[in-house]
Structure formats: structure tokens, C-alpha cells
Amino acid sequence: MLWRVGEGECEGNGYVDDCRGWNVVSQNDDIAGTATQHGNGVAGIIGAAGNNSKGMTGVNCHVKMMLVAGGNTIAGILSACEYIRTNRKLYNETGGQRGAFVVAVNTSWGLDSGFPSDAPLWCEMIDWLGAEGILTVAATANNPVDIDLAGDLPATCPSASPVS
Image 1: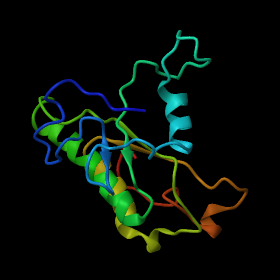
Image 2: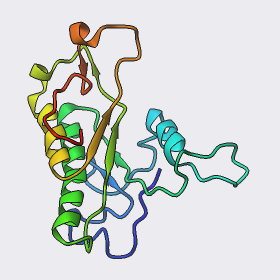
Image 3: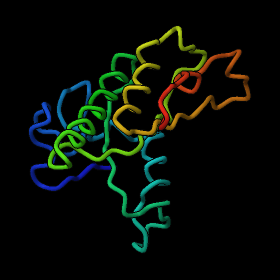
Image 4: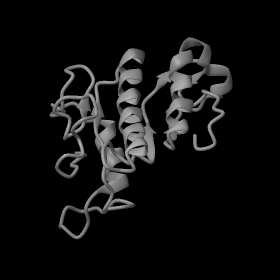
């Protein structure tokens, strides 16, 4: 799940050396070993290259993906989302000359038992992403609970954005 962009597309966005994505903890594009669990499986379902004897093909084997790693805390999640938003905003503002045309963010991570009141900025970030044209896709709890009662972030975040 590497985001490989054309030369120059990852420059001038306020992040130094981020042509392979962004690690919010180390503040660079060293993403090796950071996405070795659930995210890789989800990325494979979305965009695994086909016809290569590897045993699977993704839903869209020609998709470009942006790997953003290190969002294991609410602060890290906000930083990761801001990286994504910054790149799409830059793309929008420059007519596609810089930044990245991000259409969706997969948030198949979350916080069980979390409510919007526990993380208002996290929920607000969904609207900020939507304002730039980014759809937020949120997974929910991996257990049979009523998330309206038990809580689950970001799945319980309300959104006014027409694309979230």
C-alpha cells in the first residue's frame, strides 16, 4: 500500500520527503513496518494488482493509494487526516498541479466505546475532509453491539458534509 506519485507532485505541500506517504509519528515518509496489520488487508481488497500470480485482485487494481501511518491516538488521527486534507486542498487550489486528488479516506480503525463528545475535533475533521471533496468511509465495531448505546468512533460521528 504505497502511494507513489509522479515526480514533483509530493513537493511544495509543507511536508518534507513525503513521496511515499506520511508517518505522523516520525514526521517523514518512512512507512516501513507501520501498516502491517488491518490496513494492508483493506488496501489489498481495494487495490491489489491483478494477473500477477499473487492470488488476488483488488476491486480497483489501478487505484493510487496514499499511506498515512501512525494514527494510533486521537492526536495522531487528527494529524493523519490533516495531512490528507492538506494534499487535497492543495490539489484543489492549484488545479491539480500540486497535492493529491484524494477522493476517499478509509477509516477502518477506530475507538470502541467512544462517543462524539469524547473527540469533537475528530468528528469535525470528517466535515473538514468533506469540505475539500473527500468521502470518509468509517468502519464500526467488530462485535455485535448497538453503537448508538455502546459508542464507536468515528462511526458515531455526525456529519453535515454531503460527501461524508
